[in-house]
Length: 195
Image (cartoon, rainbow, N blue to C red; front, side):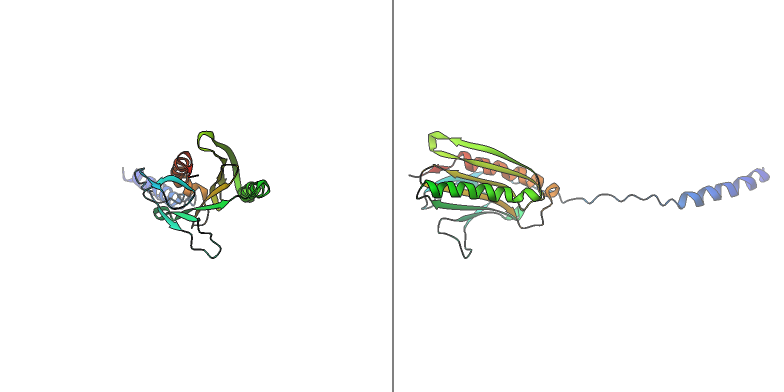
């Protein structure tokens, strides 16, 4: 019996040594923090401006204080997600100016083509409220994930663009973008011109 154990000992030792020297290591992928989404609740934005809409209560509306801001520009600040929906409004004085603004919206959305994996366009059409426009859903590692404009095709033009104060990594912010897109959809579906 001892001779058998003596013969097996080097074999077991060799097996243990060879098993310990396996250099086939594959690291685990990076993980992201769990995101707690707030309950969807909305309030009416009703300032002395030519439009109103509903916005999520977990976001705050702030007057745009940038140097070139106009009086009717606002930011919808999603503090929890470190993001902003920049909202700009212009009075339209004629067809030429209207056409130029629509083209600028298209150019600003397609400026992200370099990094975008897809840019989907959806027509916005609420004739009962005279609200028309285009919604751009931009996928990929781009600075902006959603852009849109609304107009009455005569004298009002309203534009929105969603940005995050983070380096764009679409796979990490995708759940947040999907969550905020529902709020943007709500904003657009409740949007009205006051005159």
